[in-house]
Image (cartoon, rainbow, N blue to C red; front, side):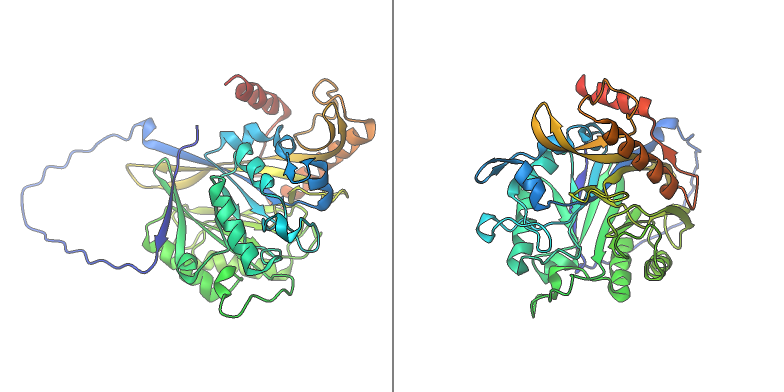
Length: 399
């Protein structure tokens, strides 16, 4: 069961602490650190959650009623098992009166959020190039609806005060600050007087936000960037420069997105951070979309396990693992569907009997592509095996 506390903390507070010391006899007793003194938080990240028109048409039940829950039914055990499940929401939820639409100006039904909450998502990054596709009203309604469906978000805001606040989650005594920024808004101008609507990548702003988080004594500063060049499987110079500067400013974990394909992961030496070693993935790629071509029809679930010794306050990344996930589009016993399929079960006919031989080929190809790309810079990341896939599915279904 997930257990966490979300704290939205205003930066506009100050306090004065007075310490009085005096000489006295002190007896110091050394207390052994027991194994259960270590607490752990598991974060599960996925890539872009997109909703093209073909997707909402496939999910349509009635004129203005949609069921997207089937899309996530095979990955729900993984998302729900994590303490926090997190992704980039690359669509606006502006309401039916605006008219539902896909690319280039997205507007998905409210039911899309229902499915995300049902799948186990807790936090959505909303700073991306489609954030203001439906103007200021679209931003504001998206935030409102995310909250109504029991989830949190960061990267877009309803006011300056909201933008100045920090999103801090406390998971098993581990405090994590989440920050999110986008490289651009596809040329759509942010309305005058409402620059607070979306965080644009700006080094001064990032420095200010990280400094605020550190003043709150968070254990981890996690930064999400929506940046890079679409469909490129290597980070470009701009991505590398922004990541390097953000590391210098004190980020511990950096999660990238926007290219719609997966880019490599790497580790780095932190600067003024709590864990000695930090982690970056330059692009998480897609997780659900109608982009059917190679490298874009595959995503992954990335698990980052953060551990903390509650006696020594030492914090470290205790495990990092990933599982590729391929998007199936076709006919099942339920009709025409999109389904995110985890792992590589291309040789197991009993799990997904609806897969054609071509589907299996594409799924296996996507699995191998993802393994190669993810580990280009470092092999120090675990692949969740197919046997683990079956185990998690069985464990979840037995609850």
